[in-house]
Length: 447
Image (cartoon, rainbow, N blue to C red; front, side):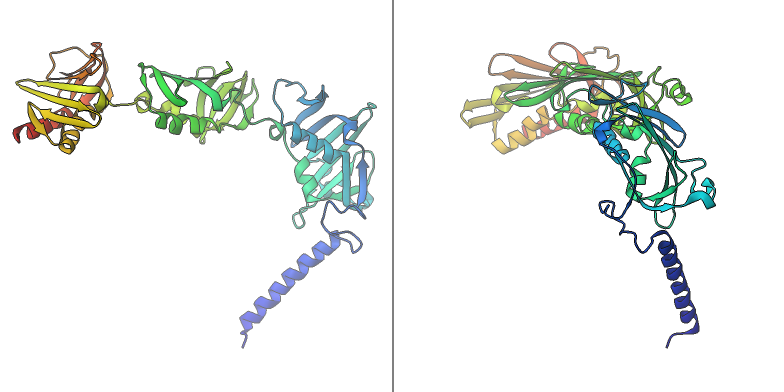
């Protein structure tokens, strides 16, 4: 049995449904077609011309004035002809204004234009035809129940109700017609990336060897880069950079953007010689100002998040990543200890020794060789001073060349790492060197 409260609720719901029905019935007459813009059999014609007959469109949308004009079969933004436009979007606007059909015509003589939002229209459209004649249309308010818009030909008193799809499409501001992709370089053939901040300079160059791509760091040091990190931190986000907002030069927002005193400068270039510079300004609400192509934009901050990434992240951090097939001897001098590891043989038939005693292959590779080549830098070295090394590791290659690594005191916690050229680029934790020496001592003492 339905309670008294339940009956009241059902009655209230019925009243709401009846009200909605009457509201729709008032706007949608019995002889009007369904809400289908493609069904024009009984719609009211407001204005029709061939799309190609429209050569210019002057618009005012929410107080913003802008105009599109044809120039050699392409649309340009009048007064800002250097801005790239979405040509298909402007073409579609022209198509929408070339064929205007209404759902219903209203005799507006008995009500003021303010009743329809046409005394102060949301948008004004002035189109210029090929014969130099013009037509002007006004877009009024949107009906909150049906989503229909009030519309008017400025030359006649009648008011029309146009379809939601028509009203929503033509009710766009200038930014929505601008090309949001601002990169001029080809990301598929990107060959150089440079990032300069107040703290550091990162320069990466793409090389191709045997059809394999390898990024090489040129600054702050000349060293093989970590391809995975370059792809993850830079390429994957830079590829999707797009405009969230266009900023007019001379505006208060332009002055506050910070692009003329940039936080960072990013330069990208591709194999075809295309080169583009982005000046990175201030950030606001997860967006960041940039200047490129002579204009200022707001973009998603994550698209340039790599400008704040330590260049150290992008390098291959192995100090001496030697291939075991290229080595025949490794000598380790550690204060009062000496360890000599030898690799004899060929064609996967090797004998491994440490200080003259034979060591099982698996033990040698895991506890000796991997420890020696697995040393990983922890930081860039800042103003290192050469001191007598506590540990020296020398790799003797089969081709007669030598790679000598010296671990010299840097501070209480770290060693400075000097390479065969006598230069120091990295520091490494003392603990890591001690662990390597402990592993050698353990294997050596078992012989």
